Length: 88
Image (cartoon, rainbow, N blue to C red; front, side):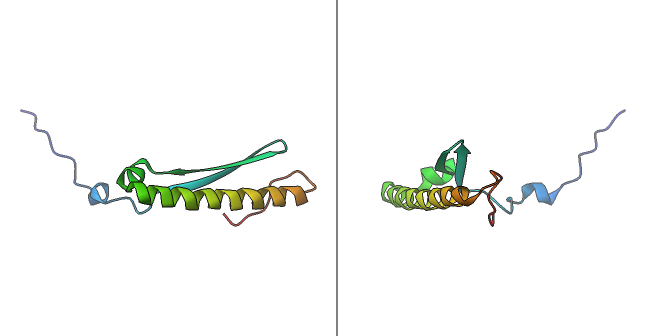
């Protein structure tokens, strides 16, 4: 008679991930055009009140504007057409 042995329990599978990306900012370049946009984890967005969502939107729009402008500025100083240096 065959018996099935359960797989050993792995407590790491039960633990929450150590990092979760909740908000991201993406700056992209296509030729001479630089665009920036941001995103938020869907669950975080659902958990925010309308007022909190508006505050996050206002702040993140400012962040993407600043980051996009700095990226474009750095590209304008790049004479070699290579990737700009950054800290990320």
